[in-house]
Image: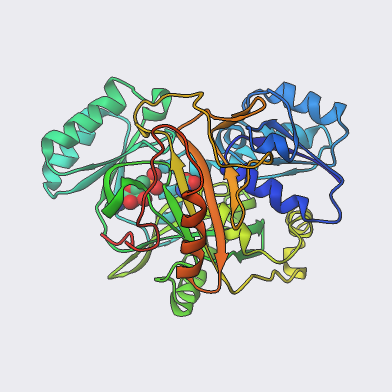
Length: 423
Ligand code: AMP
Ligand code: GLY
């Protein structure tokens, strides 16, 4: 089997390393990839949103499968285009990807099908949105841009002035462009957050092992939110009892809702959950594998990922048994100094072997390039990951590998898996 991976982050590197373990895979290529990925797969400098070029590459290289990992091309209909040309693709079509691409769509779906989530109203007029915030007069209140905003479209507002500013930035100054045509004004909820990824073939859903992300940039959950500074799996808050409740009240109802709406979801669906005092609630859906959740979850996958992908595409997920490693996994993100603000690129990374690895851990590359040496090329640079009999052991292994890697200004959190993301 020849596979084309679309994307360039740590998530894609983890997917490629997992797929390489399959005896069924003969070749993996990637567009555009990164420095670390280039040691595992031939990379092509095609942007993920260039549908036509990706189609041409898939045809030219006679690939048997295209794996579309990021949300932008999924929303933009890359899977639809590939399927129209008879090419097998993993990922939802554009209609199903709306579950992530439009928060208004996702929230209205949850309301219609009684899937637990924070109370909300949707507005396409800034005056009406502000009027609602004023009349509601309860803080914090959460203001969200409707569309994709690189994970930055959520503002937790502590007073009217902050809410007014958020609504203005999103809807009037349009800092996220068309993604700010609508806003969702939402009730603020609290509790530990859990990430659950699940395989779904349109009918059957099979959740993967749980994970916990750490979004704030600094230790103690301080500072601005990032794409994620580290993950652990399993999530210690996610008991079997809660997992059963989520299956019954959230996972199955979501799959059935999408089916009933004529948008059957095939691919990986990501549930961002909050365990509130009133039970688990959906904070967000993503239409794809999470980053850096994938790095820890896939380290624990024992079943051949190719078999699962085929079952998802062929609608036969009910026929496959997915097995997981009982061990714990941890991933520490090494980021560029300054991230999530501005940062330098092109700084040499030392301590990695020629494959971009360090003994005792698996290093998933995110923002790197390779030109004979590994250099930084993004905000999140590396995801240094390890398995262990216990969470402590996994963390110890990952952190001792981090200590061997160096680049100027490197920043990482020292408390991943130690401070839970409970607010
Ligand atoms: P999202 O981009 O939707 O995942 O939101 C980013 C983060 O904002 C989440 O991980 C939560 O920590 C926080 N958040 C989003 N919605 C709410 C809410 N209704 N109440 C409290 N926190 C929220
Ligand atoms: N780690 C959350 C995400 O991938 O959006």
